[in-house]
Image (cartoon, rainbow, N blue to C red; front, top):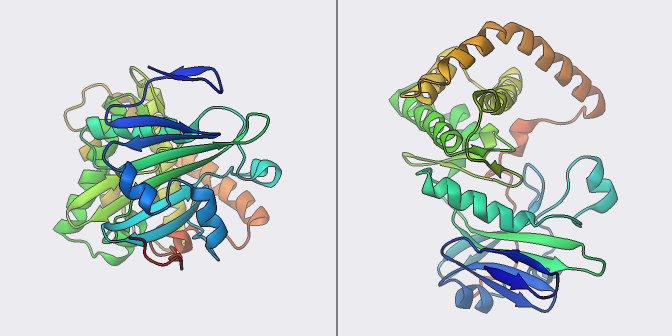
Length: 307
C-alpha cells in the first residue's frame, strides 16, 4: 500500500511495478525499466511533445509518439477525451487515474493468459486544482499489424482461420476473468506471426464475474464495429464470424443460450446499426475507420534515437 502525501490517496501498485512521486508528477514504472526510460527522457513526456513537430494521430482517443532507442521502439501515448469533452477539456482529466487503472487491467489480462502489450510506465502530471494529464509508455510491436489490415490482406486459408480463433479465445479469457473491454474493436487486436494480442484497456473494468448479458453487450460492440467495416469493404464473411463464435463458446456452458438469443434477434440489431451509421454519416461525412488502422496510420516522430 502506497500513501500519496500530496493528494491524500492510497493505492497498491500492481505486482512488478513501483510507484514514484516527483513533485507534481506521479509514476508507476515497471521494475527494471526506470534507468533506461530516464536516460531516454521518457519519464518527462511533456517535454517530448514540445520537441516533436507532429505526434501520431492514431485511431481512438489519444496521441502517440514512437521513440527509437538501442533496445527497440517504445510508444508514448497521451490520453485525451473523446466526443464533446475533447473540445471542452482536451487532454486534461479531473477525476480518477486512468493511466494507473489501465496498468491494473492490462496486468489482469496478462495473468489470464492473453497476450497484450508490455506497459513500461504510466505517468500522471498534476496541475493546479487537481486536474492531470496522463501518459502511457509501452513496448512497440514493430512487426505487428492490426486485425483490420490482416483480414483485408490475408486470403481465406488456415492461417486466417487460426488467427480468428485466437481472437475469439482471447475475448473469452478476459470475459471469464471478469474483464469488460471498453473499446472492443477489430483495431485493438494485433497480429504478429501466429500470435494475437488484445490491447488498449483504457476505461476497461474488472469485476469478480461478468454476467452473460454483459459479455453479450461487449460482443455486440465488437460485432457492430465489424459490420460497419464490412459495409466499407472489409472482406469479412459469415464463416469468419462463425469461427470466432465457436472459439468463444468452446468449453463454456453458460454463454451459448445467451448467444443463441442474441443471434435470433440479429436482424433487428442490424437495422439499429444501419440507422446509427446513417446518422453518423450526416455528422461525420468523411469518416472511414479503415483509413485509421492503428499501425498503418502511425507517423514516426522525428525525435532522434535516444541512447
